[in-house]
Image (cartoon, rainbow, N blue to C red; front, side, top):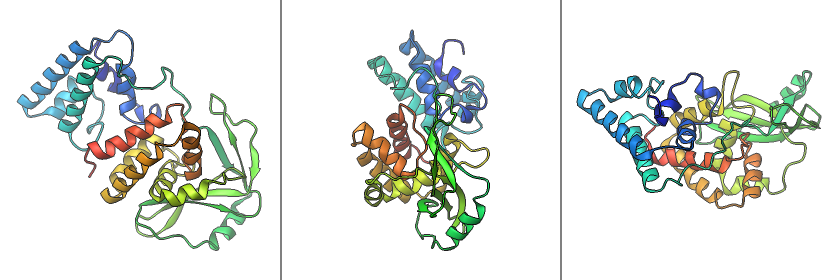
Length: 294
């Protein structure tokens, strides 16, 4: 619908390749200059009422609301998602300055790249054969290992995602999956030298370490994966108890100063390094508590 930001935000294909979560395009649209939040709230409430009267809120959201998704953008209930949009618009009517702290331009979501060299397979296999994979209650897990020989390169990327000044490294990040048994599903090169605070952070916040590395490291996405797909897979596959601990530890993590927060994310293996990563985390912990995912 012309001039209506929520419909414009979710009326597109390939959103999983563009955004980090489904709240991002909505918030970007709501933050554009010249919005009439009172009009948008009235229009949205009318849309929701029509869906309820027809007994087909999902159909009305998809057709009239132009939400180009088979299921609700967040959680398992169209009703609950529509309720959140209503609350968000009402908040902006009350305070138009309460727009999200997200930059106007899209960014490359990863800040570093870690690549294994072509002839490293034998070294990796020998190293992994000596590692006892840890047991645990999380579906995904993450650990780091120094294999003793250079097996890849790691370094920052430029604004276009191209590696710059990569350095040789003997350290790797290992992604584990416990669908039926512990098995390695991803490996990537990590920084040659680890932050001396890393182990302390991992001990203090074990759920953050397991899930942020297990679902958002460079080795976790697979061929067609993305942070958006990984996040919603995590929310549906990890247990409610694990997600509750994850969100609780996350609230403590957010108390760190910005530089320490970013260093901790790298220590956990998290590859997402956008300028608004704090907001990305806040939204992740929020959706765990606001929506049902099972």
